[in-house]
Amino acid sequence: MTDLAREYGEGLYELCEEEKMAEEVLLQLQMLKACFREQPDFLRLLSNMALPKEERCGIIEKTLRGQVHAYVINFLKILCERNLLHEFSGCEEAYRALYNRDHAIMEAVVTTASALNDEQREKLMAKLKQMTGKAVILKENVDASLLGGVLLEMDGKRYDNTLRHRLEGLQSILSGNV
Image (cartoon, rainbow, N blue to C red; front, side, top):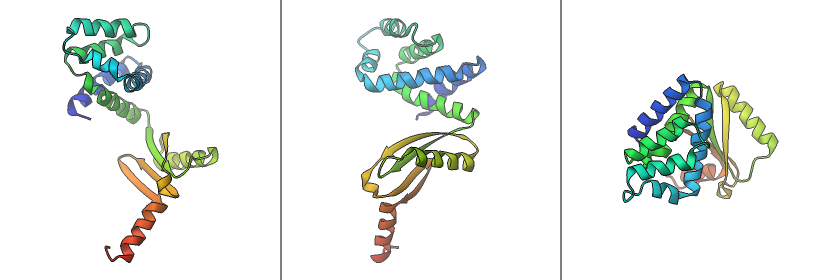
């Protein structure tokens, strides 16, 4: 995330938090981020310098009116007018980070060799909540190359307790590369 994206995302968050609508806008930003990822041509159209800014802003207004809050529409228009729509993803990330901080939410990514079952997921989330004192949003990935165990990423840290990692460590010890 760039400093510019952080600045814009934080500005929007402060406004929305003050207006008691931070959660609503967060959900809308996340929805738009997913839409932009699924429809990259739309974002390219809005970033096309061959179209006048007024026309691009009009497309934003017509497409999103009634779908998202006016703050979100105006935010996108500002990014469009300043040719900064490519920063939208970072803005959403900065907004989400502040929201999570202020609402005691922690995001974690867990990667396992096979999908977690409900019991494993619940135990992991309960353990993480106990460790951090925060509500947990868990994103799950499956990577068969891990062979077994768990790779957990949270708060900018990586906890690797996978069989692949342990085997690599053992291989390093046996080859004398300690």
